[in-house]
Length: 177
Image 1 (cartoon, rainbow, N blue to C red):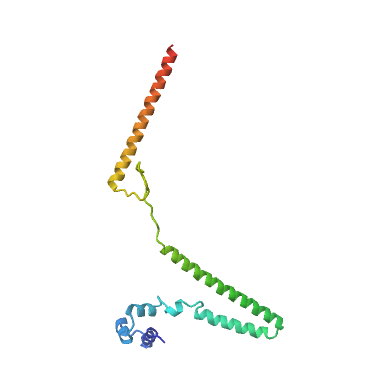
Image 2 (image 1 turned 120 degrees about the horizontal axis):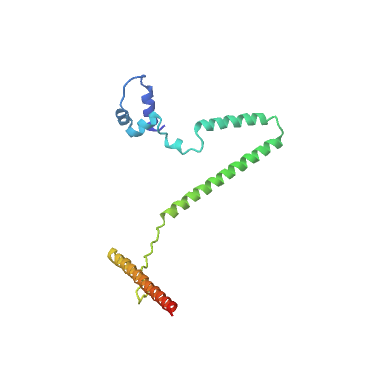
């Protein structure tokens, strides 16, 4: 029995209403005070119980069910018993296979999360003599690039506007003739 369980038994063996300190009991049994308090108050359960496939209560119920089934099956033919055994074995084998798959998938997910995510540099404006490699942009250069792009768009709009005005003037002159 682990020391925390012994400390809990020590607490429960005291008279009802008797005052005690978790700190004193934890110090006497050499256990962590907060773990002792949580376990005693039922907010935590032992590590071994938390990682069990079946809770001890479920395990006892399952054993009782199996014993009643075996008693009932003693009267029936051996074919039925063999069939039940085969199906139980098949289900348990599938269960173990699925648990293995789950374990493998969890490990794969952890590995995938651990992979470093590769980041690529943003090629905003390739220089005229571009020979490959990464181009790093400072915030100032990125701002200047955005301004340059905005100016280019503005100049393009102005040129289009001038072309349209010339076309309108040409149409108007054509109509006057």
